Length: 247
Length: 149
Image (cartoon, rainbow over all chains, first blue to last red; front, side, top):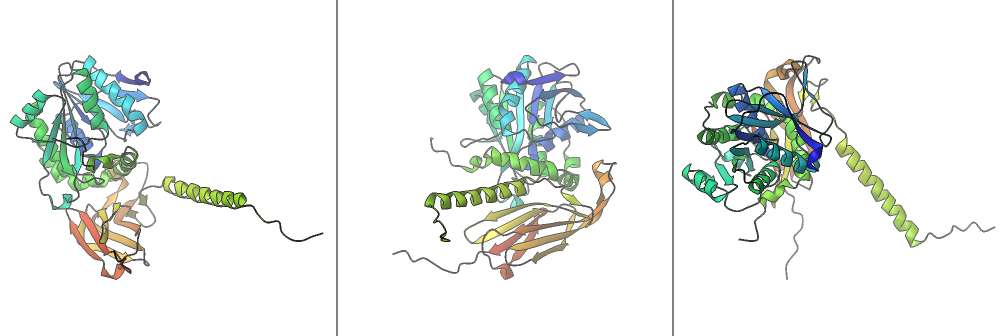
């Protein structure tokens, strides 16, 4: 199945890098955070994902066509974003291919960023960030970084598969999830996640511009949020609210 | 020749009902799938992201309203089960602001209509605006109570 998805490389790919994932998910937290990091660090596009499983969409930027699912990179960082939600049907092969590709590029760690929907988000001034990891050493590492740990519960969607495939392939992986709105773009939650990423990935990113442009981002992100919401319903994202049975 | 109508069998009646239900379901799916833009040039309005949440006591409608001053939000009841949210923007937004140069037009407000999925006391509607999100609280109508023996 994985053969129908391929990563097309356009430039040299950094090796021994940290790979960031920011695919559309709740509150578009990962997408907003990753796009901001790419823009702040001025990373070029180094690869893109091609597959018949993805919709026939091309995104025009400055009059030139780009694949919606793209990979950017710099010195010690690779960042994956998608300008459209990845459907449930395409998610397995796409995530498997991305993880396999990262492994072939000898990534030293995968960090996937996202949101954790909370009903009282309007009342939260500074969203908390929770972490989950693919192995025990990384959980200890997150403890040392004073991150709240996601001890029990369900993860659904791109991050769930990233975690699963990375654990399978023995690639160290961390998921960082900020308290966020479920179906409204949440730049504040994205800023909270970036602050934690900078502690782990050894990069410097000032989030003040992201916070200043929060209203503009919410305005621009309405349509992709709406499409993402439909996909989240399809993949039963609301299962993340469920209480786990087995302790 | 007898003009008496032939009685329909129970199976025919069921089949007719099933067909009606299927047609209704198709109609619903079609209406849900028809794609339309989130903007309307005629009214110069953008459609905000909206959600409806039903709790035991109330129906809560929320809308994401960036670029808005709370005093410029209007929430109106349009009948018993429909509300309309209109909010004038602080500054007008143009297609160019989104990097789009092949369309012309500007938007000065958000507007949407939301259907309320169950009976509410629409006159007791309350609103609040926090962190750019409008919340409309509509207490649910409780016309009857079932006594537990």
